[in-house]
Image 1 (cartoon, rainbow over the protein chains, first blue to last red):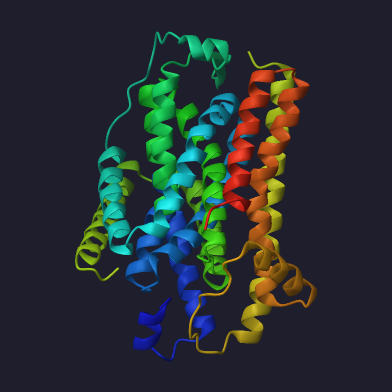
Image 2: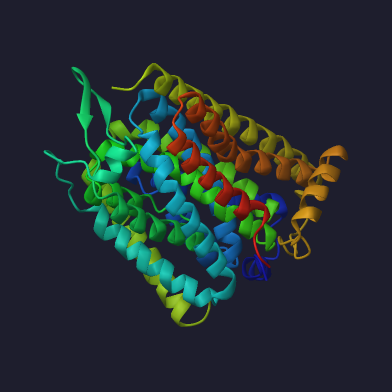
Length: 289
Length: 125
C-alpha cells in the first residue's frame, strides 16, 4: 500500500534512503512554495503521490503538518511587523475551520482518484491566478458588519501608519469556507484562494491579505489534521521528513525571495505545476491514484 | 490606529508561534535521528500504521513511546507540539481579547477554538 510502488520497484532503498529522498523533495517543494507564495503543499502532495506512490490521503496528512509549520513560522515574522490584521484573520477563521472539517471529512468518503482530479483542477487554477495582477484598492467603504466588529485597521506605510477599510464581509466568509474545504481535502494551505477573498472581495491591501492569509493557514490546517489523525492517515515515518524538509525549504525560499527574479520564477513555477497537474489528472482519470 | 494592547497581542502571538514551531521542529529532529539511527538500515515494508486510528491509543502511544525513548514516539511528540501551536495561539487570543474588553471577539475566538477542538478530538468515525 503506502510507499509500496517505490519499494517494490527498488527493493534496495532503506528507511534512511527513503527518508532522505522524501526530505530532499520536501526541501525543494518548500523553497519553491515560498518563492511563489503558494506554499509547499501544492508541490509536495503531487510529488509524494506520483513519484513515491504514497496513498494521497497519507500525503495530504503529512503535507498539512508541514503547512502548520511554515504558516506559523512565517506568520510570527509578519505579525511582529504589524502587517497582519488579527481581527479579520480570527473572524474569517470561523469560516475556514468549518470548511476544513468539511473538506477533511469528505476525504475519507471520496475515491482517491476523485481527490487527484480535484487536486489537478486546483493546480491549474493556481497557475492562472499567480499570473493575474492585483490592482490597488482605494476609496473602499467599510460595510456595516466590518464597522460593528471594528475590522478597519492600519498598515505600516513609509511615513507612518496608513488606514484601510474592510468591506463585503459575508461574501469573504463564504469564499473562506470554500478555501478551508479545499485545504482540508487536498492538504494545501489554499493561500491563493484566501488572498483572493481578502484582496479582491473584501478589498484589503494586497500585503495585508497575503500576511493575514499566512497567519490563518495554520489554524485551518490544524483543524483538518485532527480528522486525518483520528482516521489513521498520519504516519510519523512519512511526516517527519516532510515537515523537516518543507520548513527549512520555506525559510530559505523566503530569504532568497527579495533577490530572485519574479517573472522567471513564476514561469518556472507555472511549468512545474502544470506538469504536476497533468500527471495528477491523468493518474486520477486512469484510476492509478 | 492600533491600541497599545493590540501591539502587545501581536508580539505575544508572534512569540508563541516562534517558540512553538522551533520547539516542535527540534523535538521532531531528535526523534528522527534516534529513529533513523535504529531503523535506518531496514527495508521499509509499509510506512503506515493501520492500527493507529483511535486518538486515545494515539495519545497513549505517544506517552509510552516518549517514556521508552522510542524515535517514533518522540517524532509523534514533536508533531503533536506542532499541532498544539495554533491551538495555543487561538486560546491565548481569547484571553487577550477579554483583556481588551472586546466581547464580540471573545465570542468569535471561542467559536474558532471550539471548531478546532472538535476537529482534533471530536471528529466522527
